[in-house]
Image (cartoon, rainbow over all chains, first blue to last red; front, side, top):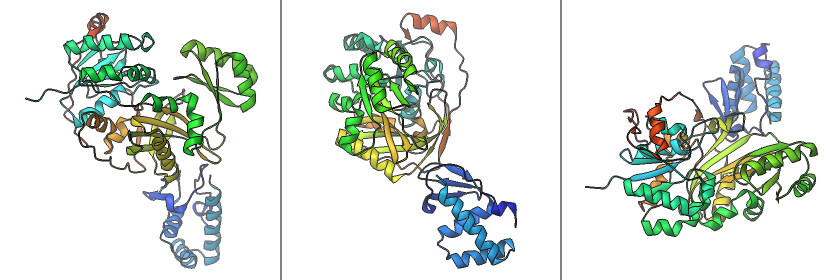
Length: 91
Length: 364
């Protein structure tokens, strides 16, 4: 499991983040158009956010994430859950 | 042949607390490149006097300080008009606005256009009345108490609770964290700006600061606006960098205030994000120092103000794209003692002409 995937994805403090407000810039910055905050993010975080914004079903996201990073679906699911937990508490 | 448009602008100093004048001038020149810009200055060393760039002035005049009152102002403007007949005057400093409001009839009789803000709107948007305005408009404003003496200041601070801010009527503010600090901050503000002093609760939350510049149509509508989050601050809390945001809640607060006031002309609204959303901490009745940033991305509010003053059709400004940002960049301007000598006589006419950069292209 890569440190990049499981780290806290560079999200720092801010206001509540809504996916619809997040714009991924050059695959390395997440810009919240509503709060004006921007966060440096990993490539894997950018991938997850982009898929979620595309409303990719969770199951399909796990599949594509596990294939992309060549990890098991179980680890992929955990990675994504952890990331979403991180995202939900960013304020 | 059409007469050259002559526009007087004040607030020319771009120091560590930059004034809006040069930004307003630069924006106007984007739409009106041949306009003759007359600088109204209060000091020989206002930095804008020495700019040879697109934010420079074609001529400059020393002005009586605003506390000399409206008569001194109109007398000086009459003297200037004898040399450069003025079409428009755009005051860019808070302390100037009351005199301009008092002189609205004088300006009308001289056919000089100035922003048509009403005294009523101005008073309702002042620091002292902001809390009541917020209540009436349905916009959150930190609790505010207006005080005129030290005893009342202590009482107000106890009532509001620490930490809080003590603010001067027009300028200046100090954070007060304990009763021991009240007297020092209160006396400093009284000495610098006179009374009353405004005690305003601190906003608890993320502390993120948001600024909105806009232009009201005088009927409650908004002709254009640009909202930023301050991403860099100077030591005294001024924006040194900002990024455009598109927050519907913030926009709604702005629209409510402008609608309630039926605001005419330029304004700046300052918000802090608290636990329960944006709280309005200040309203300024003029363009902010960063007003040329939106002008560069298609929202040229100073040029629209000139259109309004000339009774030209005004199309609503373009929306500023979230993510566009500005960073302030200070440069050294070259002057000469001869310019100071000329200014000592009250005006700078021979050596003020800017060499407009060919890169200055009208954006809108």
